[in-house]
Length: 227
Image (tube, rainbow, N blue to C red; front, side, top):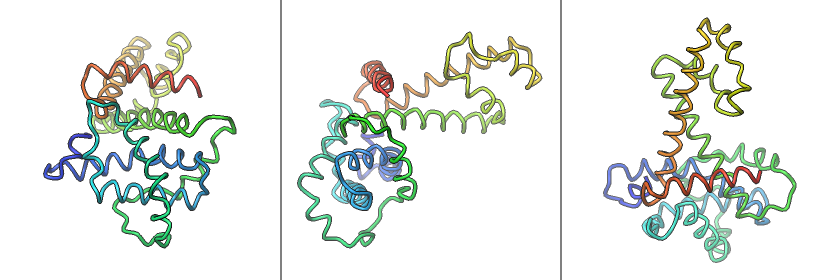
C-alpha cells in the first residue's frame, strides 16, 4: 500500500494515499496534541500536514528498506512541526484545500479520554497506531462476514476474540444461536484464525517484506501491553 501511494502513475495511488490518511490521521493528531498544541492548532497542523503530504508527494521519500512506515510518519511529522508551523499558521483556519476529509469533530473527544499520565508523544502515537491497526482488522472481518450473510454470527462471536479460551461462554452462545457447542467452538476457531491472517496482512501493508511482519506484530503487542 505504501509503495502504491508513492507512485503517482499507479491507478491505486490516490486510493492508497486516501486509505493511509483516513486510517492513520488520529495517531498523528494525538501526537501533536501531546506535544503541547491546543485543539484548534492540532487540527490545523494535522490537516496541513496531510495536505502537504499529498501535494508535495512526501511519500516518495518513504524507503521500505530504511524502517517501518510508522517510523517514517513519526519522523516527518516531527520535522513538519519543527520547521513548517510558522508557515502553516499564516493560513486562515479552514481556508486551505482539504484533500482528505478527516473526522476532527470526534478527535478532541477521543483525545480527552486519554489517561492523564506521563506518556511521551511518541508513546501516544505508537499506542494509537496499534489500536488503529486492530480496528481496521475488525472492520475488515465484519465486512467479510456481512458479505457472506453472516453479520449476526460475527457480532455474536466478536467478544470471543479477546480473553482466555476457557472463559468463553460457548454453551451460552450455542443456546442463544441455536447451534451445537462444538459448532460454536469451531466457528470461533475459524474467526480467530482469520483475525490473525488479517492482522498480519494489515501489518504487511506498512513493512518492507513478509519477514518483518512477525517482528512488527511483537512490537505491536508490546505497545498494547503498556496501556
